[in-house]
Image (cartoon, rainbow, N blue to C red):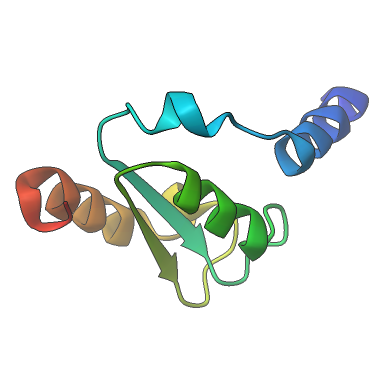
Length: 88
């Protein structure tokens, strides 16, 4: 594992800004975030949700950063609902 590259990527994830203009044109976006995520700050994910024109942010209580691995069925159900029209 390249620890230096991982650290650099995490710093970029935390500090980079996305241009609001380009994101408003994207299709609906579903953001899933764990309430116990220690990698991506809650303020960061809320900022991202505000940038996307059509987004839905769902906080999964008690979950950490690896949602697809720790809560696969919850993620699948939320994604399925979102793209079947229940979420947007």
